[in-house]
Image (cartoon, rainbow, N blue to C red; front, top):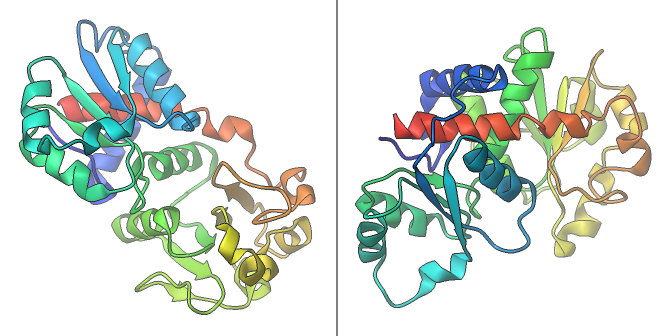
Length: 275
């Protein structure tokens, strides 16, 4: 039994084990792997892709998902008591909540796996899915040059963690004051794009829009990237903000099907954590 709160919980070996399981799930294996199992999910109503794929992924493997809003975990009852009671009936706990410390406390006392479906600190399943998708369509995804255009938020921090684990070439481009700790930064977005194979973005908080406007990824900016470059905006993205309309309409855009493997990857995470 394992928890997944950060990509470092997997390490390089664990990431490739998740990829192997995702391959097998894509081939139709493990169809009844969660038969008779119950997964307790804590998701806000606004969650879309991650929630759909966790719920569908659990049900299609024969499991039974039970959904609660994340506020359920914010009552006076101590989390160690919540975890121990849930252990009577739950085989898996999947949580989307702003505070990763809440997930850490649950995991410290839970007899079943606790899986991070996004916090303000990080988003491991999202980036795992992107890495898996890239491993399937790129000649050698670990040799690609990765550019992240965005602030030091949960997506940027998780890309940084992935880069450290897999020894990826990873550069951030952003205005001064929004840098990730310990990451090479190029303040000129055109110069940064010119050396990029994979361009990743994150949403702009409203208070950052004007500061980040010169860092918008456009089709013209992608034309200066390395041959075969790919634009991978983290959804939900907004045309006219972190990406332009023409960039999303261009062949550089990874496309909507790029995220289709989120289903198999999250199923693979469930199976991996259950051991």
